[in-house]
Length: 435
Image (cartoon, rainbow, N blue to C red; front, side, top):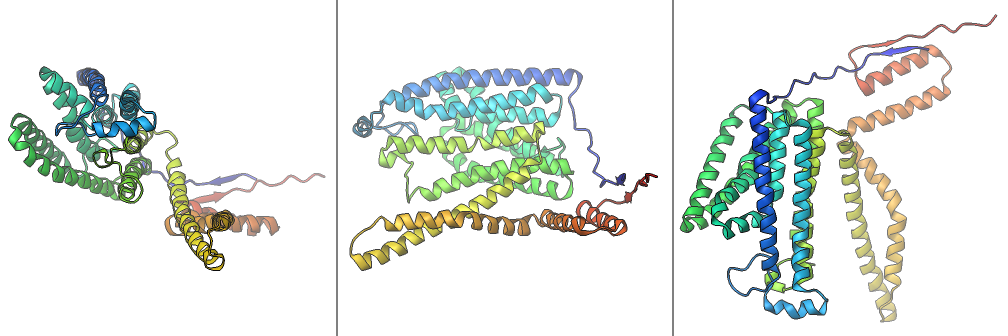
């Protein structure tokens, strides 16, 4: 039996804006120059910061992660030297920078002729080298003649290319068109005020307050633009690209918010208050590695490898986050209740509460996961959930039905409800009968 079923019409993908001829050669040379300068300055800055972190500081000009002499006894108890502490503090940022430069370089190598890919690769490189700005700024402070180059890399990574990315992602075009002028105004304003603050130290405090509000406005505006593009302008493929990037940013924000909420309850990541080297190292590693989601998400979205996996990842993330939260609540709640009952009866503490709570959580995991999965699919993936139910019903019908006309009508209805094509044709090949 031959079937010819029309497929749903997919939107045509417009050609992405590209760089050609001399402009492409100039852009590639500029990319290589900025990357080389940034990497060299970053490497020099890492060496300078390592030397500073390997010494103690007790003044107002200490680095954010630098220990005071009061922390040395505690470090001796855990067998950690200042040199090891400095290496562990810098290792996460070095790994982050290497990953960003590698992904940016890969995008540049494969798609540097595309405007979107070119600007994204340059932003990833400068973003990786200036995440906390300390390494590049340390080089500029130690060698004043490199200060302009340090400022250039910092402004590119955090001010110029970030709003440009939000304005033109994922197809390389400004949409709405006024975003081009908004990006130019914000970039010029930010760079001019920042340069003034560097030249006039008295203006630094005012600029720090103003820049925080401006940067947050820029970030929220970029997210709003991406939402508008996703809802009204993006094709199916571009929507998958947007999902990857938005998911990466949201996961980073979620980790940072979780750290902020855990700060007063479990871990205090502020070395100035606790002088706890391990907590400081842990906080720095978690906050740095959280940002790794961003270059990975952008790399996948631009290189377009297995884009539709993001739907499965988001679905599983939501499901297991809910299940983990519910099981944690059940675990600690059951421990409290059972332990209270055991204590009231026997007047002693018993490990029975922990054992019973663990068994309860193990027994609840599978049924709770199935119920949460069904609820999430119904609420957020309704179309896919309905399609699965329709296919399941068709499988039941195909097993029991023997009339070809009824089965053909059922097949047409299933295809129509799940794929929603404009036209459906079913051709049934006559069966030759043996004489």
